[in-house]
Image (cartoon, rainbow, N blue to C red; front, side):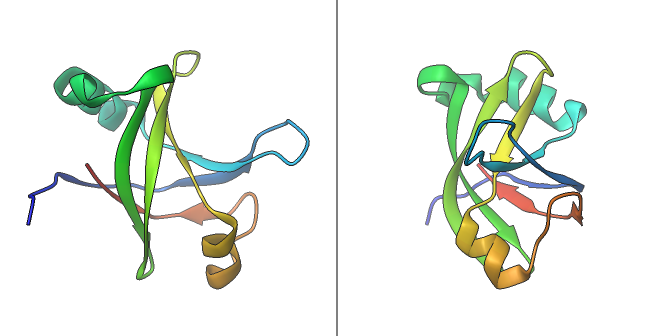
Length: 99
């Protein structure tokens, strides 16, 4: 088993403005800065970094994306996770990220 760093945080679920826009939670700036400072070498193209995420016992493999405008990583929330947990835009969500 490979050890991973766990980050816990809370944030508002929001939807990207593009049609059929993805849903995200913006990670706090302090956590984003720590990840960027310490783990940026793991990023692949476009600031993407592989991660696992968990919300209320629902765990999935994903990637976080660094947004240069806000200087935060964005966690995309899959439709199946939103459906299973009845998550709606604007709700405050408390995920865990494993990198």
